[in-house]
Length: 263
Ligand SMILES: NC(=O)c1ccc[n+]([C@@H]2O[C@H](COP(=O)([O-])OP(=O)(O)OC[C@H]3O[C@@H](n4cnc5c(N)ncnc54)[C@H](OP(=O)(O)O)[C@@H]3O)[C@@H](O)[C@H]2O)c1
Image (tube, rainbow, N blue to C red; front, side, top):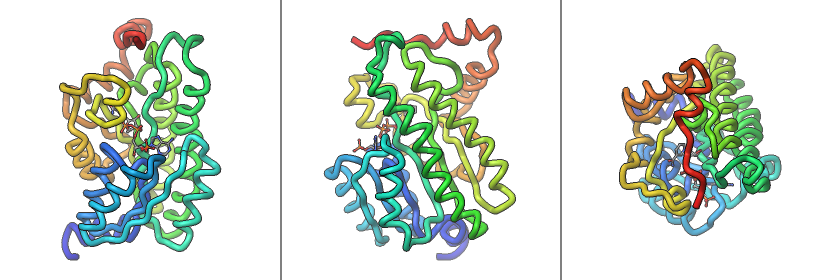
């Protein structure tokens, strides 16, 4: 490959690890990485969608490895993923898995599900980044994208644990973006708005007005080097992220984003 595609492959290749690469935005992102010549390691829980995504990507002419594991048990998951990546040069990591699983006034939420959300978005992002960022720093190149949410820009009633976990992701990304930049490693917190993914459909949301996973993935890939934070979806979402982050008094900011309790 030559030109821009060659530079992309040189900087972020030859292998990409996508945590949550079987469906929705993660699957679309993985295809777009393959179109740029990267080989893929895809991680998710359900083997069916994982193998379907892998088959589509193999048809693009790159190598694909898959692993079914649960990143809400981050240490065990990292050990399992390392078994297939320790012999590979992972030049890019996308940590996509992390949607919310439970909703309500906090004492009423299912604490076991809330623990999983926090484990994926806090411990998981930290564990995987610690390992793969270290290897990228040693090579002097690479890219890491950690996925967040508009909900992480303000404490969001009914999804308190989720919004707090995505706030961790943003703050963590900002700090390591600065630390790793001198070593040639790009870090990006990809701040996502409502998107029509299979997970959201399964959770019962009407996704008819939601953003298209293909568009979100394409925008993410275009802005890997534009860290520390990229808000997907244009000026309206960027203004909304700013409003949620900066609006004073905070009582008004919080009251403006209340979700209905789950039916
Ligand atoms: N969709 C939205 O409206 C929206 C809005 C804002 C932010 N986001 C963020 O965007 C990201 C993607 O969201 P999504 O809606 O596509 O849902 P998701 O449930 O995070 O699913 C994305 C991918 O991650 C995998 N995954 C989920 N839980 C996993 C686990 N415990 N272990 C391993 N893999 C797991 C899924 O496959 P399996 O289910 O087979 O494991 C799938 O491949 C999340 O971080 C979410 O917070 C989404």
